[in-house]
Length: 51
Image 1 (cartoon, rainbow, N blue to C red):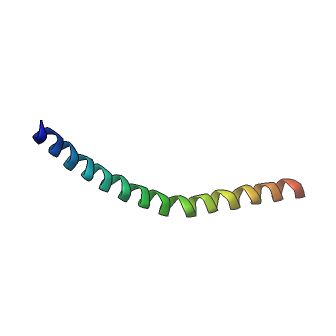
Image 2 (image 1 turned 60 degrees about the horizontal axis):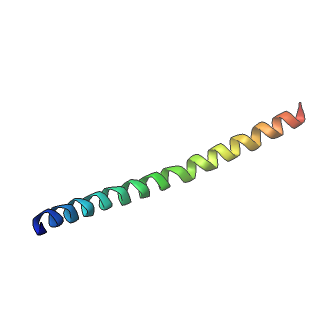
């Protein structure tokens, strides 16, 4: 029983490491993407208001 929990712990640690790396990569990509989307929405609204 103890061997199984040790294996699970190791797998959980690996999963945590990969998710943390994925989250940092995702957050670093999401910030410029959100800024671009926000600017494009503002640009569209300004363009519509001038039409």
